[in-house]
Amino acid sequence: MALLQDWRDTAYSQTADQKTLQAFWNDYFQQEKGIYEQLLADPDTVVKGTVKELAEKYGVSIQIMTGFLDGINDSLVEPNPIDEMTEDTEVSLGFDKEKLYKNMVDAKADWLYGLPAWEQIYDEETRKALYLEAKKMNTIVKGKKIGRNDPCPCGSGKKYKFCCGRNA
Image 1 (cartoon, one colour):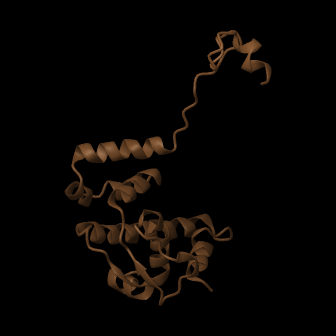
Image 2: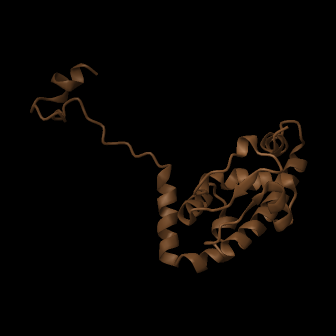
Image 3: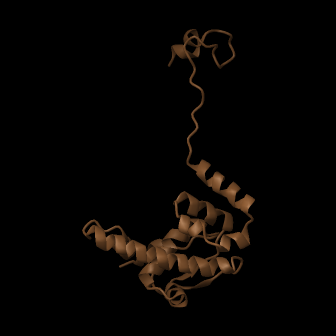
């Protein structure tokens, strides 16, 4: 069975009781934090290896490493083939720092985007700007609603209801 499917079956199990699942995620988040602390200590070095080698390097199980790779994949410069990944698949952890920070904010992972290592990478002003950018990414801004008696936005000079509003 593919590693990713095994990870998702465990992490998002519909049959596991709530306490077990909560304990699983708490454990995962602690291990994830440890991996990120090591990666962010030297953010310009691209870490490469097989899934098994990386799991050993960071002292985590292959399942936890699979979950980590699933989570970081959207922030990588070159995404890994996580769908068909096995223990011997060669992967890279070359991440885009800005994208990673924004994705952490978007995931509401304050234990990750609040890591002290980010202070060595970006100054406070840059972190605030990236934080705001990430928050705005998913914000939908609706334009002003056109009233029926307002001038038509097409520029004809007619009321909206007698011009383009007729077809609406």
